[in-house]
Length: 123
Image (cartoon, rainbow, N blue to C red; front, side):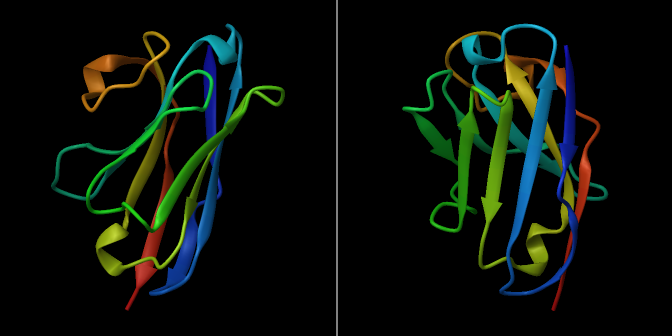
């Protein structure tokens, strides 16, 4: 299984970005997907997850109402739409595949990770 994250970049505060995570190998539609992020000097933190069917989603309090996670099982791709970006959203964003149908708040709930894509929000 390989996960390829893309879509990061430099954006001004208040702007938007859409991250994509393309999966290859395995059966994408059988597993939950998630996005985590890691800022310099900080631990990796949960951002959002989506169940295998897409019917259930969960968000960190810090991004609730601004970010939207989605997936297209026909395209083996997960997305993170990020709106109203803030400087504190600056981090490397990682996508991850869950161990089963439902996601987890903890990194240990995922066994495959993408390489990360840098998101920088300027003030």
